[in-house]
Image (cartoon, rainbow, N blue to C red; front, side, top):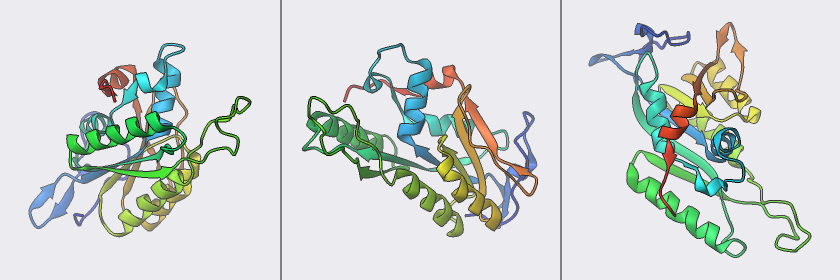
Length: 226
């Protein structure tokens, strides 16, 4: 974490000197950590841009490519320090093939770039899962809490200068507000163009949102078969 000042206004197309930090080495770009609520980000894009009837597993999203796009698109600049991906893990006893596929995917992502870290929690299943009359799908439990805790904890520990939260989940707003109130780090959010977004205005400071379009989605797809 670098000492100094951070910008408090949205990035401008011409760039902004407030996006940089002072250190003993002089003026340097801020270190950026990207927090990815994977299921939220992936399914939002799937609903908007995948052909009707296309299974979600046939149009996967690469968190690494998303993070690269976001950092490159920041007018004030930045250096990608870490990508933290939060998602549920299927129970191998209930969904063997899906659990194996997501395990291979997590391993492949980790091998793609050592800066990427996965944080997975077991999915919660309905009691009658697997029965012919069960129409309820498994749900993620604790993913938003895990992400929210890390956003605050890592900011307090000075582990990042800029945090970008990729999610539309409003349950994350209290964590974002806490970081803003503590002046612990600079926080931004990201979503897809045309989708809902997290909004907050704290002491006149608006929450900057990266709105990724369909072209970005196309560039960020993970086209490997798992």
